[in-house]
Amino acid sequence: MERAAEEAGAAPLRKPDWLRVRLADSPGLRETRELVRAQRLHTVCEEAACPNLGECWSQRHATVMVLGSVCTRACTFCNVKTGRPDPVDPHEPVRVGEAVAKLALRHVVVTSVDRDDLADGGAGHFVAVLSAIRAAAPGTTVEVLTPDFRHKPGAIETVAAARPDVHNHNLETVPRLYRQVRPGASYEHSLALLRRVKQVAPGVFTKSGLMVGLGERPEEVDAVLDDLRAHDVDFVTIGQYLRPTLAHIPVARWVEPAEFQGFAERARARGFLMVSSSPLTRSSYHADADFAQLRLARDARLATA
Image 1 (cartoon, rainbow, N blue to C red):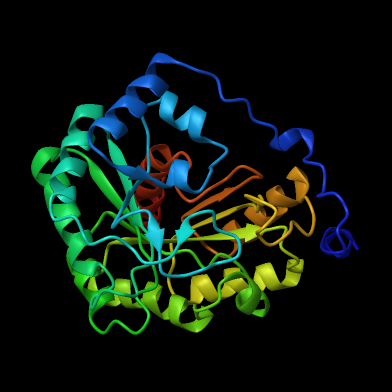
Image 2 (image 1 turned 90 degrees about the vertical axis):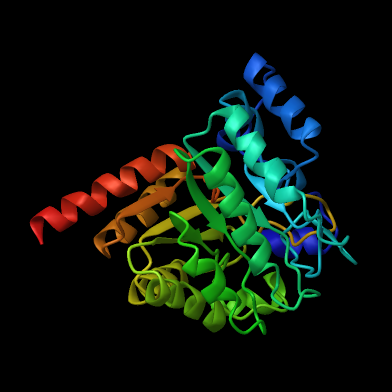
């Protein structure tokens, strides 16, 4: 009923209080912004209009988006521009490495737009960025959040073989909604990617994320959690979908905080090493602290095996 009202031209659903975030200025936020500008970097924090930007940047945490700011896909939930991407910048990896070192990050997340125009989907560039970060900041752990590399033979293996500390690829939604939410993507292919990472690089943590509030049913979320565990995924994130603009797919409903707690409990019962589930959870939100907890959880499980 709520979605029908929006699609009929009624006012969008009013955002509940638990999703209202104020962007407070701080020295850390300003420093992060200045460094991002100076290094001519793109961040998913800005491009995707993330509600957690103020909090993360004030702590000098930013998710770097490589391979430009224009995507070859047109997912209906995403605020990143769609069109013809710019040529790949061969100097970008060095600039990313320098930025990570200057921010003194313990953990960094590197993502990208989809680059269906490239023969390898940008896999080689991910590896170059990983190498540059490790050269400039050897104490920093690296999490990659990759596109699906669909129809790019060998691309998944190329990135996995570089052994990032975490390999993240988001399923985003339940299979029934893929045609509406992720046109051009395949649920089965994305699951296969996560399994393939484990096959190529045993010991590398795998991670995936879901948005809720798009019209999925609770049992469909549970089925996705089952699929992720069947593909040996270690870490799942679940957050509320927020409509970036009126041109994007509407919010079907606001999911109550108690429901996120229920998702978390059911995910933990399925054996995930780490679960982050809240209205404001995003793939990279608190990624550094979560990575530390992920390692502790793995070590504890190994100790009792």
